[in-house]
Amino acid sequence: MSGMAFYERLQTDMRLELGSHTFHEDEVIRFARKFDPQPFHLDAERARNSLFGGLCASGWHTASVWMKHNMVHAPKEWRRVTGYEGEEPELGPSPGIRNLRWPAPVFVGDTITFSSTLTGKRINQRRAGWALLTVYSCGHNQDGTQVLAMDGAVTLRLD
Image (cartoon, rainbow, N blue to C red; front, side, top):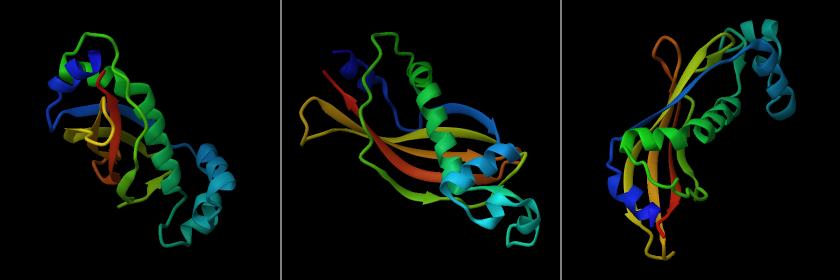
């Protein structure tokens, strides 16, 4: 019953530090070519003349990098913040996110630091043996400006 033991240690406001990523020009352009081909993500000159004033990453790129950091760093971070030392709990799929926002652009050369904070937990009454954890996730650049924010959820197996 490792999931329940882990669940009982969870407290709202526990913060997971998910690491940092520097956005380089080649990756910003490569992502944009494949998934978000807007001029301010593809061409430095056109970006200078845009609303943003410089080449910047797609918001979807920023969110994708958050997801990579979440998958790599969250398991050890959950252990760190809870002090839990038992068998690794099984986190299941997310039922979704809400309020996805990109309050400021991510420019080439920016280093974004990502985190998630537990905002709630509850036993899932519709799916026996599972709980739902809610989290607020965000990213800030090297100057402390928020560039990503979202409310999300993840399932946790209890038995």
